[in-house]
Image (cartoon, rainbow, N blue to C red; front, side, top):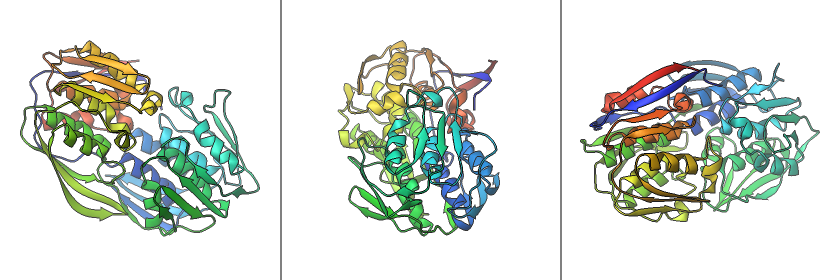
Length: 442
């Protein structure tokens, strides 16, 4: 899903955040709700679905695979599930736009089907590594062809059967774990994944919520193939990755308290909360129960004097998507912040270590990009002109830097913000960020 227009954010100095904010639904949960609801038996009703480009790419793919899905209407979907073996061959390659989650998880879901499928995406997605998924699926008997570089297009051919495997993950990756487990739904015997570190467990939780038995024993997750999922109700919580920008904006700014409402508090996703607390943020979490296996609550935060820290390796996988925002917090903290063990950031929608380091340098921050992380010396931020390089999280992170910069910040390459956070600029403006949006013909 390429964006024909170029989008620029311009943030004037002097803003401050305040009030109650509800960010859009969780992207990771939205993807899985559509996929698993589609292969469940019966109707699944989803509320809070994220109507961003990435989740909509998954929705379009499942429709192309023969699933009737009504909506979205104000975040509500009605999915008429076809069961594990009810999908049908699409008429053309499935274009997944910019969504790596869609491509990697669908590869697992589709490699056990009785028909061929080809997965493609935009230029960014077509350059992202896929062997980390195709290799374990190949061990299960899947027939998947990649480019010579191990990237998309992915050509998935039908096979007679898949075999369950006991797979030790070489890296902490929820997407790889999920792809193997989804293939395991179609495999003979038990499929198990053992993680080297904690990663998101949305797939396991939603499988269980829809009635599929999953065994979790420490860092080992296992299921047996050829069971069944039963349709149900799924409430998608507000996305903590989207909330992270406002958490950082409130922590570094000079405004009143901000409350992020109904945020997903899955313990595999709350690394941003823990890191901000370690930096000295004035932050309170108020639990409010759960829905479809996902804990939910409000997060109240207000400005505080932040201190640089060395980020513990154990928190890296549970905060991986929030680091662009956290780098802005580090740039405003006293002293040095050091991140290591986060080489995964180099193969996201952009090389987030390089792009964030370049942008921070342009705003006058002392920063050193490391092969697997970054070193940031906190201080004052100047205004300046930075490039988001088409990375939605980079664009939103630098937007929040405008709350404390000495001059205006101009951010180019912001069109992809719609992949995860449609309406970001309007919501940020209503919360107190002086942000203007310029659309330019591409």
